[in-house]
Image 1 (cartoon, one colour):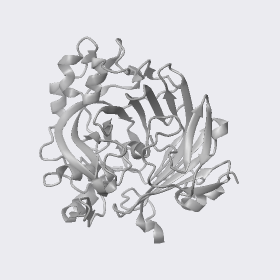
Image 2: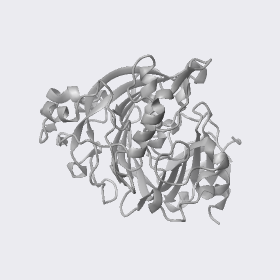
Image 3: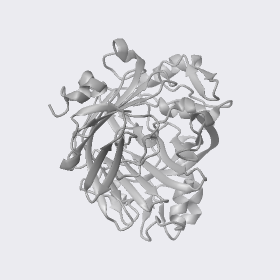
Image 4: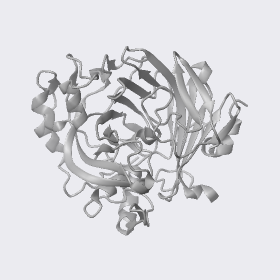
Length: 446
């Protein structure tokens, strides 16, 4: 999920299809990625779990070693959300997705000089990072945090513009409310794709995410902009444009807990799985293991629930085959100096060991009870001048909220929506001032 609108200065109340806004106070040639020393060979997965295997409600227990904990719980049927009796996992071959040559070149050039620097509040940051994978072979000390840093700085195209995607929230009665969206993301610092380097003040920015609601009509033009900085310790800035007020305002960083716009995503879930400050968390390394993951070959062409098996919303076999992916499993908790377990007790991530794209996330409440499962099913991108890349930017996502018997499903891009990358992006979206600065929000509805 690229991003949806969640703020302190705005309270979202969905009644039927209506969304009420209440303002509060201001607020080419590719190369293989160098695997870690403990990474199993790509071909080993096919010997462990042969392509052609079908996993279903009758035989899933013999394959549970290849499932994240949340998937096991769905099969066990211990909660409202449970695996349908006819749901299947069709296993295909494990494919070797290669990182772009320029990204790997930056890894080789700069990784040896990256250093971890402890902060006074118990957090960590890094110095001398200039691109690529910061820690290509993450080991102790701080192994878990190194994996997190690799995920934060994972490969992402320089510029992505999506003209139409959707996010649908579904309650226990299968009542569905959907938002259509478009977004523009741009990476400034540490970019390795061909393209112009950032100039002036933009050199301080790592990444921007501009997100607009385009349907339904009563919510149209509601827009958020988030700005992440090259210095990981610098606080993210967030802004929202309110159509009713015809102006934008800055959002308070204190509203990280609220689910947004009738969905189950909070601000920490944005940026395709993780949008927290990496210097404000403690990270425990859990395991290096293999799990089943769906890499979407064919995005759903119809409106929701096309491509999903109700009532759970499990992805149908039409979306593609599952693969046995080598992953890092880490557990993230907030440092006491950054609020501790105010929003969640811990977040468990299963991160692809080749691309560092998050594939499955389990969120626990402050009492350490399972609260939400977030599945990310990436769609491999075709990046101009780079080639195919397993990277965030297009995917199918699902949230299963165990606490509220609610679920959310996202498809990006959806229907006939266009998805442009780097030099494919039309000039109307390749506008830094409009899509990467707060003042650009003033141009909406003009």
